[in-house]
Image (cartoon, rainbow, N blue to C red; front, side):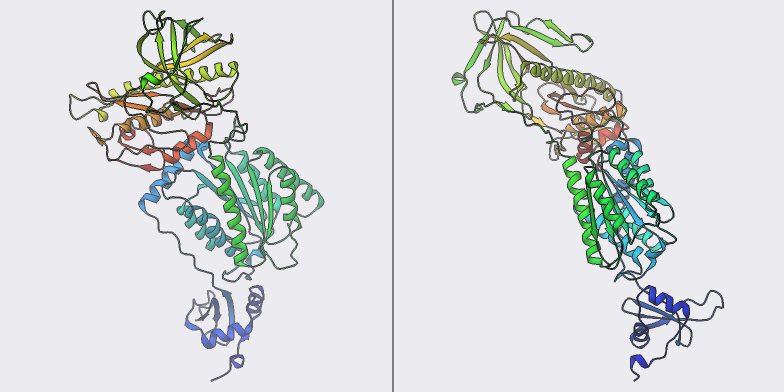
Length: 630
């Protein structure tokens, strides 16, 4: 048996050039002939002469028919298996595209990946990949896209998008605002095979394309908290081709424009691929400038190592995940307000042992009327005849995100209670009276607007044949909000004070959804048979939030719905209180109190909302991560 080095391989000029470029030695080719798998290769496209293909390890060697003359050689890339796409995945992908087209502000994050596609990216020197370009795309697919997808549940409703810019003489957006999902993962693998590096690598053209993408972000009227977070990952294997002094100045100007466009919501991660000694000064400078401008700028030299490239992309992926999580958090109030020190009254305390304080001096009752622009308050009579004051429990029995709740009664001039028990609410923070007035006004304004929406929704439901009960003696559940008013009085210290008051709800109090992603699971409860099929009563409440979003042209979202399902009468009805309205941050738009989380509320609600048969019966476009039915 002949030694490996004794095997004759006549090299062509083309073959030698390819081997040098791809770091394949002549000994590798000789080993391929001796130990590799031999099979028919594709014939010469010009002469149609037959060829042989030898595969040994990841080295592929093409020879003439006699297996003595080298034609070409290359390293076979690591085979990354595409994801298996299910009908559910495809339906969710199409729904995400529909949501992005209909309301692009729902997007929580935008990853912009710049991949160098200059001629040097054809060099085959990254172990496991045919060339640097395929290595960049392969690691992007595995360590950036798949990494984020594996870290969240399949039914996650967050809208994240990815754009990919290929850099050579120009900066071409190959993918623009694609949903981050397994369908996109497969598109990146397809692009890995098709990408064709060529010509130069002009940094400025690529950065201009990044700036154009960012300028198209739907950020009009938004503050930093409402904008989508942007992460730019810039991958290159060397210095820029546009390397004149004025090119460098222009590059810094473009970077300043990019950072200024999205304020503190951007991070830039530069990744250098190459051997030791490669000039990455331009990438280092870019990361440094971004940091100086107050954003997150980093540079990583990954050498020619698949492992180090993976670590660099994985780090960028982790930062994006952490930033996205922080952006979707509703606990982002920079100013920590001092809370009142109170003792909560236990439910077990009997009525006879509960302590109340009575107030008679200067007591008046007010309704909120937003039609009155100058002073939207109107004084009205007490709720019960003969009442002229009130008593309020000293210790609260309930506490929410913003409010404390106390038992409250109207009383007559003798101090005797008249009418039913009510609930008084006030801020749980130590606020001045001016801030308390704003607190009461925001509550009343929100609840009154919610009541108007509920009346409209109830009317639409009654007029929708698909939502008619199969039993003619039944009615669909109606949605109502409690009427609220403000009681003013003079405190013993001579200060004018106010309390927010509404009826006490009787029954099991339930939170149905919220502005932070909570969603009530009704499975296992009673059902109602409608023309569209069986539904849970609470499906009407969830569909109500969905309906408000689309009936206001996606400008408002009514959520944080909570209260009781009243089943005492002939027909079911929801009695709700203390809702939240999230509003789009349009120019001049007024916030609906501190619970108005703006775009965070919209995005977190979309994560949790489950479209149901009531949504379908109302003809609402899909909104949320899942479609369910009993």
